[in-house]
Length: 281
Image 1 (cartoon, helix red, strand yellow):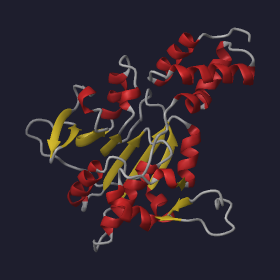
Image 2 (cartoon, helix red, strand yellow):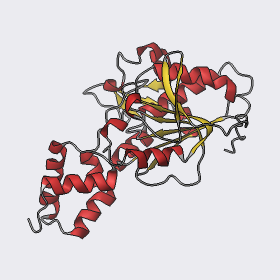
Image 3 (cartoon, helix red, strand yellow):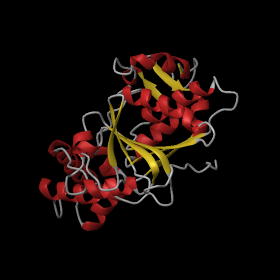
Image 4 (cartoon, helix red, strand yellow):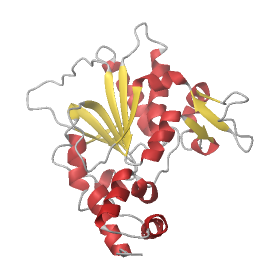
């Protein structure tokens, strides 16, 4: 292959472009993919592979399932009453194929059943891998996305996950598939985004960034956290994976503990009450 790049060189590019410490085995797969697909590794090809999502599809971890780490969903449920008048805007970062975003939507939709006036909400959900975002938009899942961890919310999953109708192209006789209720899609916006880049003029009351922090390169963790903190409202909350809290350190957020749930909050200026702007949907 012309201009063959070593595993170390590709790993360095992945770190600089995606902010991750890629698994050597995955980098080797990427090296083989470039060889088999392009038979050369000049700068234009490398840029194409990393910009198009081809590299992301091979280097990122896409483990996800419904109501993973349920303690965070209990935490969210307890927060919802304070947003009934204003609405809530939520971001799920590194959302993979969408189970987290749909789990949040299930919880809020179920909460809204008991309200005379439904709580307005908006969920922005992104990932660097275009393939998993495409899958998230379709909302078709198999039984592996329903696991024991999260089973306490299984009653919600059963309410909003339906088997495709007979004759549907999504109906697979080989194993069970489930399709999310279209109702859940109306308030979710899925899109492709690189955590190394700024999110623009957005403001969120709550950001879920779970079970992805551990894959970040220590060199770029602060930069990625800064991009998330920048779009968090004053008084807003950042939630990371249960096993990740000890490694999170950023001057723009403070560690908190509520009912044994660890999270991070963007401080409100001294003497300034927490104020949530009315959401425009």
